[in-house]
Image 1 (cartoon, helix red, strand yellow):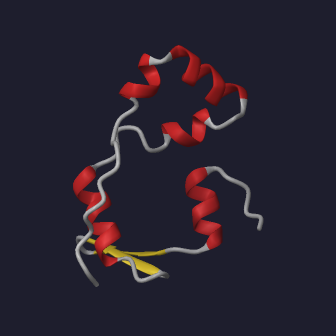
Image 2 (cartoon, rainbow, N blue to C red; image 1 turned 90 degrees about the horizontal axis):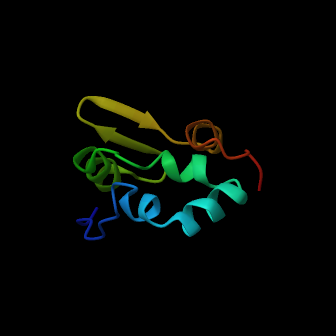
Length: 81
């Protein structure tokens, strides 16, 4: 698998600084979902992305299986679709 070059924001500074955005995210019910990603570990996220094969990823010595169910559980989103 190739190197990952995309880097995402890893904090909520922009959301927290903009009350209108924060309120809109809260209004539509997305704020808890977005807050799951605030403060994540950039190195762990990168290692997960680099080793993810569509079903599993490895971070350090930990193998992580990824399924619709695990995504729904981790994100709080409904397991639909």
